[in-house]
Amino acid sequence: MARYLISRAAETLLTLFLVALATFLLMHTVPGGPFDRLVVEQGVSPDFVQRQTAYYGLDDPLPIQFARYLGHLVQGDLGLSFQRQGLSVTDLLADKFKPSLLLGTMSFAIVFAIGIPVGVISAVRRNTAVDYASRGLGTTLAAVPSFVLAFILLLVFAVWLEWFPVRMGKGFGDSLASLGNGIVPALALGAPATALLSRLTRSAMLEVLDQDYVRTARSKGLGTGTVYLRHALRNALIPILTLTGPLFAGLVTGSIIIESIFGLPGIGAAYISSVTARDYGMIMGTTMLFATVIVVANFLVDLAYPLVDPRIRIS
Amino acid sequence: MAVVLRGLGTRPERIESRGYYAETWRRLRAQRVAYASLLLIVALALVAIFADWIIPYDPAESRFPETTAGATIDPLAERDTGKYSPPSREHLFGTDHLARDIFSRTVVGLRISLSAALFAIIVVTLIGVGVGMAAAAGPRFLDRLLMRATDVAYAFPDLLLIILLRSVFGDEIFGLNSLLGVDANVLLLFLAIALTAWPTMARLVRGQLLSIRETEYTTAAVALGASRARIALRHWLPNTTGPVIVEATFLVPRAIFAEAALSFIGVGVTPPTPSLGLLISEHFRFVGITWTGLFFPTAVLAVLFMAFSFFGDGLRDALDPRTRH
Image (cartoon, rainbow over all chains, first blue to last red; front, top):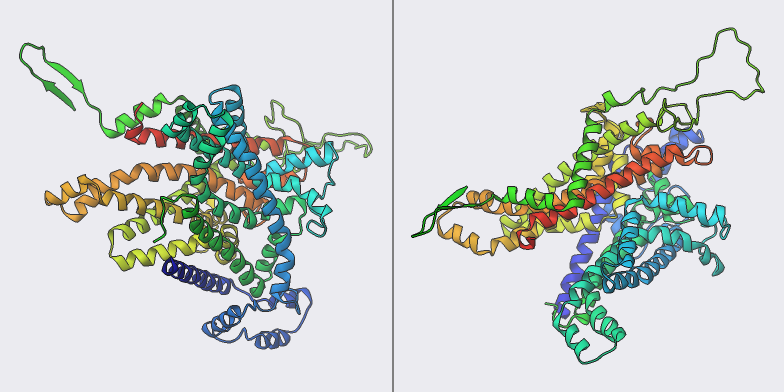
C-alpha cells in the first residue's frame, strides 16, 4: 500500500512536471513577449521594453528560465503577473479561481442530486412513459451546446420569470447570498454531465437488478425501497465512482464558456486575456492549477475504489 | 461463402454464412434508430459536398434591396433594408444583420464544420492508433514512454491547451490561407482540438491490443508460425477496427461542439468564415431582433450531434458479435 502510494505520487509529480515543461515551451513558441504590446498601446520606448525584459530575466536562455521557475514552484511561489504588474500570480489565481471552484462544486452537487434519482427511476420503471421521457430529455440536453442551453435558461429565468438579475454572475462568490444566483449557471454547466450520469446510472441499475442477490432480497420479503436503494443502488454506484474524479475536474476547469455568458468573474476570461497579453506567469499558473486539479481528482478516485469494492486490491 | 452439406438420405442443403462486415451491416440495418441516423448523416454529407449547387446566394453577399436611381427617399418612412428578414420563399431561413442569406450561410457552415471534423478524426485516429499499437506491440520502455506522454496530454486542461495551441499556430498553414477549400484557421483550430482528443483513442487501442495479445487465436497463430507482421495485420488490426470506428464516430460531434464553444468565446474560427459555431455566436447579439440566425445553425448542430451519437451507439452494438440479436 505504502509502496503503491509512493509510486503513484511520483508518477503524478512527473506528469505535472511534464505538463509544466510542455506549457513553458508552447508559451515561448508564440511570438512576442509580455511587454511588446506596451509599445503600441502606451507608446513606451523599445529601450524600456528591453530593460523590463532584462529585469524579469526574460532574456536568459530558456532552460535557465525554466529551472528558475521550477525552483520557485516547489516553494509554492508562482511568480509575478506581467499583465497586472506588482500582483503575484498566487493572489490573482486565488481571487479568480474561487468563483470557478464554487460554481463547479455547486454544479457537481446538482449533477448527482438530479442524475442519480432520475437514472434509478428510469431503470426501475423501465420502458414506461417516465423512462422514455427522462431518456428523451437527457438526449436532447446532451445534443444542445451548453452555451445555447445557458442562453435559454438565461432567457427563461432572468428575462421572463425575472427570478434572477440578467447578469446573475456579477459578484458571484463574494457573499453567501450571491451563491443563489449561481444556481442557473451551475445547472447549465452540469446539464450534459447530468444527462450522462443518469444514463450510466440507468444501465448500471438495470445490470444489477438482474443479479441473483437482488432476487434473493426480494424473495425474502424485503421492501421495495430497501431492495432498490440498499441492495441494487449501492452496487450500481461502484462503476460510477470512477467517473466522479474526471467529472469534478471537468466541471471545475471547464466553466470558461458558462462564465462568459453569465458574466461570472471566474478564471476563464482571465486565462484568455493572459494568453493574448503573453502574461507568462498567469499562463503557467493557471495551467498548473488546472492540471493539478485533474491529476489529484483522478488519484483520489483510484484510492477510494478499494474502499467501496473490497474485491479490488491496490497493488 | 456457401457450404454444401451432404448426408445420407437427406437432400443437399445450403447454409449461407456471411462475412463479419456483411453481418455487421445486417445488424446495423436491424436497428432502426441507428440506421435512420446513418441515412441522415449521409444526407447531410451530400448537402455538404454539393453545397455550391444548393446554396441560392453567395454566403458572404449582402442582399440589400435595389433602390431606384434618383428616387427621393423619405428618411423617416419605414423602409425595407433587407436586414433581419423573416423566413420567406426567397430566403428560407431569413437574412441576418448584414442582409446575408442565413440558409446559404448555414449550408456552408455545415460543410466547414463537417469537413473540419473529418480532418480532426483522421488526425486523432492516426495518432491514437499509432501510439496505441506502438505501446502494446513495441518494447517495454516504449510502452512506458508513450503512456507517460498520454497521461500528460490527458492531464493537460483541454480548453487551455487549445487556446495555447491556437496562439502558437497562428492563422496560416505554410503561408496558405486555405487548404482543400477550407480556411486554414478552421483546420488549425480542429488540429488543436484533435491534439487534445487523441489520448482516449491511444488508451483504447492499447487496452484492446493487450487483451487480444492474450487470446487463444493469437496463441494459435503464433503456434502455426505466423510472422509478427501477419499477426498484427490479419488478427490484431481487424479486431480493433470496431472500437476505433465507434470512438471516431463519437469524436465528430465532440469536435464540432468544441469548435462552436471556442468560436463563441472568441478564440475559435476567425470571422468571416461561416462555421456553425461562428454563426451561432454571431447571432447571439441579435436574438432580440431575429431568431432565425440563432435557431437554424443550432438546430443543425443538435441534429448532427444526435445523429452521430445514435449511429455510434448502434454501430457499437452491431460490431460486437457477442450482442447478437
